[in-house]
Length: 320
Length: 247
Image 1: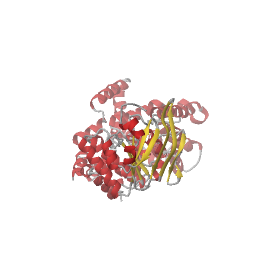
Image 2: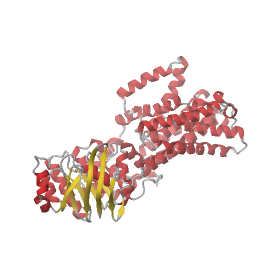
Image 3: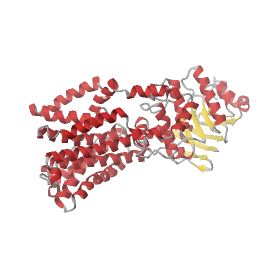
Image 4: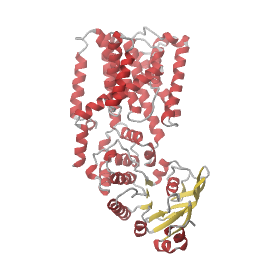
C-alpha cells in the first residue's frame, strides 16, 4: 500500500545515499563519522520542525524545547533510575509529545505571530527549569558522561544507530506527508479559513500535527544523547530553536527533503568555519541574506525547480 | 430547509445586518440582492458560522445552527464559496478539491495511506462538472481568475452539500465567464438536486435564474418572493431597482 507513495527516481537516489552512508564509517576519520552522526540527529529535528512549519504553516518558534525535553528525559532516566534502557529511550519521545500536547493546546488557540510568541515564552519556561534546577539537571553544566550499552557507545555504533533511526523516522514522516492527514495539513497552511469552511476542525488538526512533530523531536533528542553522551540547557535555549528554523528556510521549507540539506549545511558551517573563526554566524548571516534575495524557496527548492522533473510531471499529468 | 429569523449583527456602531429574514426551500435556487453594503456577505457569514449573530436564529433542517463553528455547520450539509477566490494556492487543482472530498468522507485524519489513491473518482467527477479536468495538475495559485472562481465552487461541491451558498460567484468575471458560471450554477441546481443560495449584482442574471429572490437593504429584508412579485413591488423599485434615491 505504500509503494505508490514513492517515485522510482527518488527511491533509487535515497537508496544510493543510504548505501554510501552505510559503508562510510570504516573509511573516513572518526571525526567525520561523528560530524555525520550530528548531522543525522540535527536533520531529524529539522524534519520534525518542518512538519509543522513548512507543511503546517505554524509558527513553531521554540521547537528546540521538545528536542531538549526528549534528551533530558532519557538522560535523567538513564542516570537516576535503573529502568531498562529501551524504556528510557521510549520515554524520551513520549515525554516530548506530552509537553508538545500541553504547550500546543494553548498555542493553537492563537494565530500566527501570537502562536509563536506564546510558544517562545512557554518553551523558555522549560529552559529556565533545566537551567536552574541544579540538583536534578545539573543546571548550566548539564549532565555528562551518560553511559550507553556497548553496542552503541562506540562512535561507529552511535553513527549506525543514529543513521538507522533517522532513516526510519524520515520514512514515516514522508508517509504522513503523503497521507490525507498531510494533504489536509498543507491545505490548512495555505488557507485555514477555507479549511474550516469545508468541514475540517483546524485546531484539532494542528494540535495532532504538533504532537506528532514533537514526538519526532523527542526521538532526535534521544539520538543526541546517544551521539554526544551528554545534555546541556543550550538544547532548550531559543537560540537553538532559531537555528533549526533557519535550517528549514535554508533547505527549502515547502519541499520535503530541504531541511535535511539545511541541517547538513548548518552543522558543516558551524564545524568547519568554526575552526577558523568564532564569528561563523557572521558568514551564516551573509548566506541568509543572499538566500532571501536569490533563493527564496531554499537550496533544495531551487534544485528541484532547476533540475527536478516533478513539477513538470505534475503539469503534464494535469494536461492529459 | 433553511430559515433565517430576524438576525442581527453589528460591528461597533455599524449595523451590518439588522433583522434579516430568509427562507430557502429544498431544491430551490434562491438569490439575495441588494446594493453594495446591504449586508449580503455578512448574512452569508452568519449562516455559515464565520460570524456569530448578536440576535436571531439560523435554522437548518429543524436544527438551530447559529452557535456552531463553521466546520460543524459544514458537516451538517452547508458548503459555501467566497466572494474573493478563496483557494489553496500552493496545492494542485486536484488536491484543492480532494482535500474537501476527504473531509466529507471523514478521511482527513488518515495517517498512513497515500492520499493519491483516495477520493480520486469523486474528485475527478467534480473537476469535470466545473470544467477544470484539463488543469487538474496545475498549481491552483497560477490559474486565471475565472478558473479560480470555478475551483472555488468545486471545493464547495467536494463537501457534497445539501445547500450550496455562493457569495457573488461571478464577481470580477468577464461577460463570457459570467455566462458560463451562471450556466454551471443552473446545471448544478438541476442535476445534483442541490439547493443553492447565492447573491449577485447582475440583475438580468438574477431574474432569469432564481426561483425566489430576497431583497436586502441596509441589513433589513424588504421582501422575499418570486421574481415577478419582486419586480413589481413598489417598495423595491423605490429603493433599489430605481436606484437613485435611498428610501
